[in-house]
Each structure stands twice: as C-alpha cells, then as structure tokens.
Length: 158
Image 1 (spheres, rainbow, N blue to C red):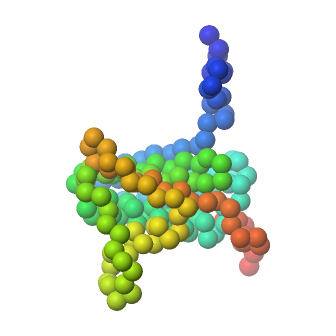
Image 2 (cartoon, helix red, strand yellow):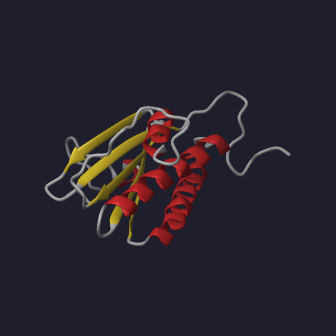
C-alpha cells in the first residue's frame, strides 16, 4: 500500500486543487455565499500565491450572488455551492432541485430585474448547464488573472 496515495494516474493530495462546498437553504444565506467566496479567494491567494485582484474578488462574489439568488428564488429546497481552483481559474458550481433550465433574455435596458444571467455570462470565461437526475447543475469559470497593474485583494494601495 502506498501511504502517500500516489499510484499510476493519481495525484498526491497536496496536488489536488482546493475546493469548498456548502448548502444554502434561505435567501438570507446569499450573503453567506458571497462571504464564502471572498474567504475562498483570499485563502487561495494566501496559500498558493496567485494574485487575486479586487476586481476578480468582486466579480466572483457577484457571480455567486446571482447564481445562488436564482437557485433560491426558482427552486424548492436547498442549493449547493462548490468553489474550486484549478490552474488560473476559479470554478463556481451551483446545484438546485429544479429541472427548469435558466432562460437568457435578450438585453433590454428598460427591463427591471432578470439581468443576472446576462451578468454572469458577460463576466465568466465559461458557462454550462447540465440537467441531473434530480435538478440541474450550473458551472462557470472565472479567470484569476487580471490586467497588469491591478492590485491584489487586500493589498490595494491607498
């Protein structure tokens, strides 16, 4: 038996990308989902060193807020949020119990509300929706790299 877990085709635990997961059951927990995202990105930067700019930190929280809000608004029961980092991206995955796929409405500056999916798709590198045996899973990825000269989160100059 290999105590460190290295076998042909497997990675060491230390090489496994960091991941956090939580279930949210109430609309008041949307702020908790944003906080979890912020804490994950800051800890990722502190543990592994990739710079996470204030813009990327805010964008990650915005994407999570929109996806968790929609899950809480349109699906009964809890939703699950998973955040993971791999390479230069953070993966945001939200599962909910509804099999109804999200509908992307055409842009309309006069429409009040229902712009969340537009926002998510505009700021994310990728967007996927998969029906599950129960519910659906939405997965997006956000690039951690930012423009040259941007300040990492928590290290902004005044």
